[in-house]
Length: 232
Image 1 (cartoon, rainbow, N blue to C red):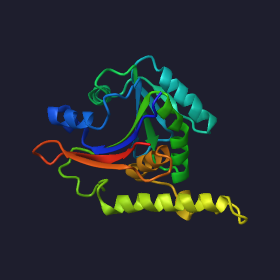
Image 2 (cartoon, rainbow, N blue to C red):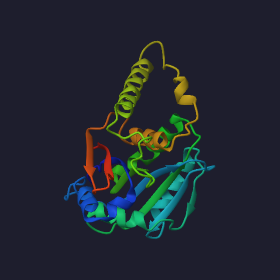
Image 3 (tube, rainbow, N blue to C red):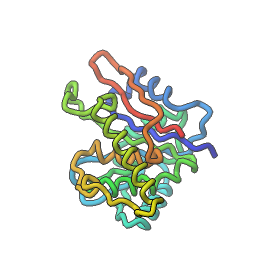
């Protein structure tokens, strides 16, 4: 089965319901790709543990993910459908109804290493017909001027820094000096939901910078869709 892309999306989900939003979503996925299931990765402030919600289907994928996360030391609760809108969102992107749509909702307060470990846990799903969408949902509060967008230089430079640090650590691990110690930032708890989702997306993308940057205006009220794509 073809390896599916990983998408990081920053948007106000309400704006995706309209025809322009749905048309923009369909442009992100090649029509020839076979997508059996869709997994959303989200984050919200607070929470004591990750949670997995299945939006449609029997929850088989949700329980499998719960088991795989448990093997890596993450305790994730599985719950029934929480938000029907994600099912409609998935159908807009995949041109047809997936067998299962699940949401992995991350809690804040873990380190970047933890979020990247979760990404490594999910990475194999890319080869199993599961489309992975890291969704950074904006609240509908005007123009969200305080929310960093993917097109902002701050976010792009941050990802480049992560990529450089990963290459350095990889090179050091092969040298006589041994593996380098993790940076202090990697040990610090993350309180920003955006950075939680971004770290997971970076890991899902093979610890590389994204190959695609996109942005669409969705309506006349300045609501937009922006994000990254790891296509390889």
